[in-house]
Image 1 (tube, one colour):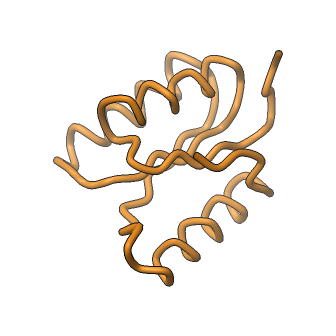
Image 2 (cartoon, rainbow, N blue to C red):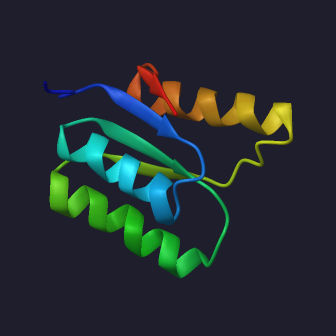
Length: 89
């Protein structure tokens, strides 16, 4: 299966299992939104690494999943950047 040109929003994906899921989607060709909190430099390193390693676009959203307006903005950001959201984790 290929996800070439699709897009995935993966919540809680700045580390751990969420990051592994985002990387798996990117490996299959999907552009990804990584989401979560943490050290800004470490997050940027991961984001840039995904782009470099898999040849996709990757963006970061710090949206707090307990705040509906931030979730809405994260989805709008993905839609503006990638045209659509095909997968939500």
